Amino acid sequence: MSQARSSQLLALTLTPMQTPEAYPAQGVATWLADAPTSLGGAPQLRLCPGEPSEIVVQLKNQSDRPLQISLQTTGDFPAHWCQIGTEGAELPAGQQMDAVLYFEIAPNFFEDSLSLGPQEQIKIDYQGQLYVYSVHPENGQRQQIGSAAFQIFVRPHLLYPQFLPALYREVDFIGRFLKIFEQAFEPAVEALDSLWAYLNPLMAPENLLPFLAYWVGWPSKGPWETAKQRRLIYHAMEIYRWRGTRRGLQLYLHLYTGLPLDDPETPSAQQHICIEEQFTQGFILGSASLGQEALLGGGRPFHFIVRLRSPDPRQIDPGLVHTIIRQEKPAFCTYELYIDPLENSLPRLEPS
Image (cartoon, rainbow, N blue to C red):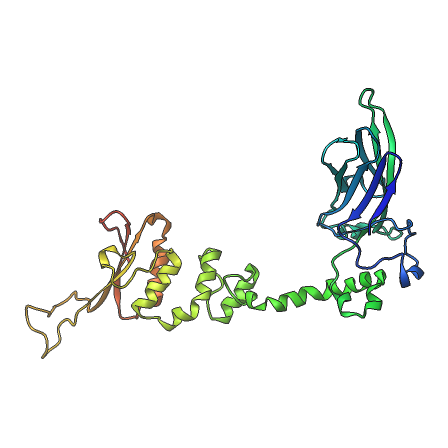
């Protein structure tokens, strides 16, 4: 809805960009006790908390001389709600210029009403007036040359009224009444729509991680950062599937250290996570050849070496790496751990 006002000097038109979904002062809503008094077809602006809204003002100079103009708004709404934007201060004779009334209120507008007293009521309908003045170029005196009224209806976004017949959607009170139930039930509906995200350890809320960890049998408390804990829970079933194998140990160390998993064809001397097996049979009567593979004392028949090559070895906790290896390796295996700088070939032996 737009409103036009004309005088000898100026033609003034107001056009709101967002209009109310239901008009409290029209149709069946007129019987409501809280319906505001109509301003005779004044433009009605719908204003949602936290979202900008605007009224476009068209100014046309109907005189034969240029006008220096200024705009001012008044009303029962807080002054900081409205900002005025113009294309300039001078309006040439016979020309037209647009201005904009920008409105925006705090996102917690309705939440602030919780602090009202028992006899206080929140105000959601407002009336305003726009005044246009002509400024004398020499002495700066102002003369009013136009004015127009407008209304502001502060309303939240409504979803449930769209499921009602058109007759009920025209009643503003019904929409505001259904908003109570919408605020109560809509969070649960939104949670169901995104339930898959709540069950994904990579995206679930942090306070839900202990439940997801229990779900897959993973310890919910440990020396892990939250980001690493998310990855470990996500890959827990794969870690279980490959437990006791080289692949399972490499995956676990990759998830903890963040070191990449190299291609199997990469030489062992260049791998970030290298596991070298040194399995020997030792001394077995009837099969060992003396002086070749036979060992007397001190032999380690199921032994492997773990080498971690990191750009910053200080970020790797050797004690935690040892815990991971002991947890993943077969009980009868022995091992050695080396944590090397990526660019240095001299190893640093970490005692097991």
